[in-house]
Amino acid sequence: MKKTLVCLTGVICLLAAFAYAADKTATETNQGVVLKTTNVKTAKMNARGKVVEISDKTIKIARSIKGDIEIMEFTLENPLQGIAVNDSVKIDYSVKDGKLTASRVDKPGAVKNPGKNGTKQIKEKPASAAK
Image (tube, rainbow, N blue to C red):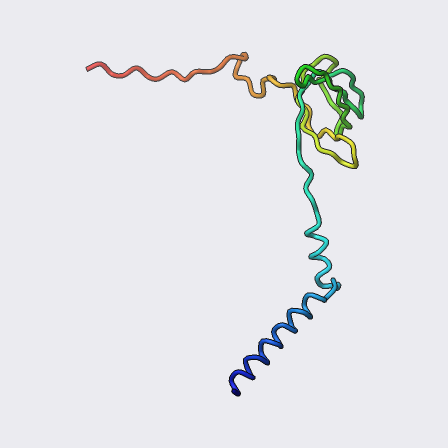
């Protein structure tokens, strides 16, 4: 009988501890943890199309989706160099404050690291010794 009473008292104390912990509000010590966990990463997306209009702060492209042409306008993080109207581009973007913000604009098919004279270099294997 005494053993059962001790176990029952222990279970009641354990349940009371859980109830007390659940009712606790955010204090200064654990409030920083709550703020750190609320950061949400924005999704990175991309689009391809032809440049319709370009300025220092914005770029508009026309892209074709299932036969329909859609005009998309992006805000630029950095000014662009070497891109003109009617160029085909690929834009990496995300949505910030309800606006499409382009983080990177590239011309697809542009050669990144050409070899000497723009041709591919081929290593020649040494001729094997004749026996």
